[in-house]
Amino acid sequence: MTKKKSNTKGRFKLVSAVHLVLVKDGNILLLRRFNTGYRDGDYSVIAGHLDGGKQARMAMSREAKEEAGIEVAPEDLKLVHLMHRQSAEERVDFFFTATKWSGKPKIMEPDKCDELKWVPIKSLPGNMVPYVKAGIQNFLNGRTYSEFGWVKPDLE
Image (cartoon, rainbow, N blue to C red):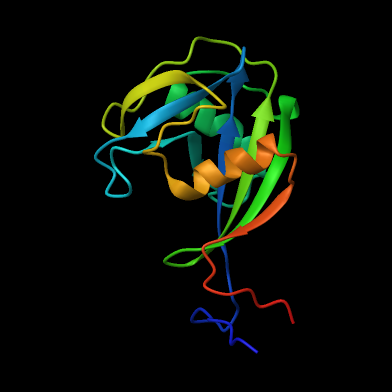
């Protein structure tokens, strides 16, 4: 049995993030990370951390506006995949999609992103953040849950 890591108060906590799988005419909106210190030069989707005190759909709506200048109403977001993953710390990632939004996507944070483009969803670039690529592939395959980055399964 694996021991859980704990914080200073003795209770384990997960880092959570939201990701937007925005698809239009068979293409997905990708951004290239720049100057962030994590996977710079790799493509990802609009994403961000949950700050606490707000629902995940609210966080996703906020990130869409902050990163790409588009308005996505929280009620128009649909959860399509949940990923439990291990990296430097244990994380849970919520992947959402939306069929409607307003505004034309544009780079809103040029200090963190140097390219924003539509790419055929079935021909993702090789230089993608690995867990994001896995999340997109799981979405395409209709898998609503996955685990990523674990050395060995612990399914006791």
